[in-house]
Image (cartoon, rainbow, N blue to C red; front, side, top):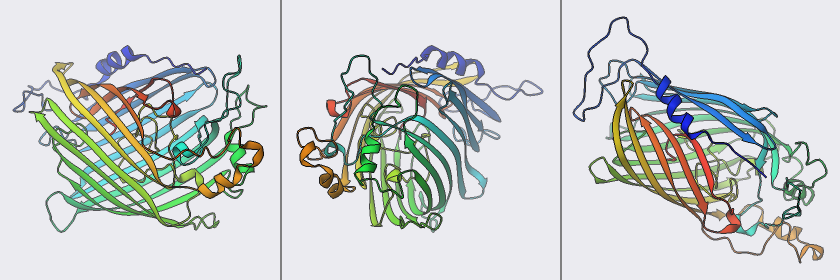
Length: 446
């Protein structure tokens, strides 16, 4: 049984202790804006410890840090540029190393974004394809003293994403975007101690031919991205009003592995922030859809959300911390999908501490999504033989429908930019997960 220790108190104490300006040679008088906030200048640092425990993976330890530069403060609360670094690992081998940068003002009228990340996960969830159509069968569930590894795989992934944004014919708030991405993904069955003699869903999919032999262990993916972005938000990290809409066309030419997995897909995201009471109460919602237009997608990339600029480290769904909080991560994956998130963002209190502007916000939420374009449905149906009809292994014969979850989050926001987030979410259908799930990290989901 998975156990996680979340040291929530440490989040506040550590961020509060270390979030500080770069020391200055001479103490300068503070300046304030019309809201009474301290106008930040120069460098700001916001480190956060990564601490946890998993019975299979061991103790988790590491650090993540947001680094901001506000320049002379004339753009505050917008920053001149931002960097983030994270290094964390479990004592039994899993972990993540990440660096990303958001550079909106380094080049005039050009926003640049870079992300370089290496994930290595020895317990990565895999629940099959097409949401409710996938069987929930687990041969080890309910057996006393047995931990099931049936829905886990071993996955390592290297990711590089570079994106740019520039004004579109001087139309207010409208921009064109372009980018390149590269993913190297390696997949195998779960290889942690205690699971050596267990069969896994991944192996069943491979043996049945649902996952093809030439893609079973992963591969290389390159992407060329072109898009349009409309952005009228008053702020990018903690907006109180405005619209952010992104339409992206993604081409994935298979010129490295040459296995025939070239494809063209389309992603659309709409975010709307509606002020209900000044800047204290905001109704925020996100609508999104992604579909393959032509070609073939390898199975290990169908859960990737192809967005130009990231707010969260993981850009995968549906299910989990970035799409449907409370639904099993990767529990709703297919060739195409639609999602919706609704949040009521209530900024309860603001205060100043250690020369920083702080806000505490409460965010009840509702998340929903479903597979809209099936992935290898015919292969899943064909894999069910007469010997498996009483207990389906691949295809449940259930119709795919909307998956939903609900919960609430607590945010600690520093200088309108660093957002420490704690979300608790529960799936509304037990087929999507029976437990209340907790997510701790940076930033809003959208």
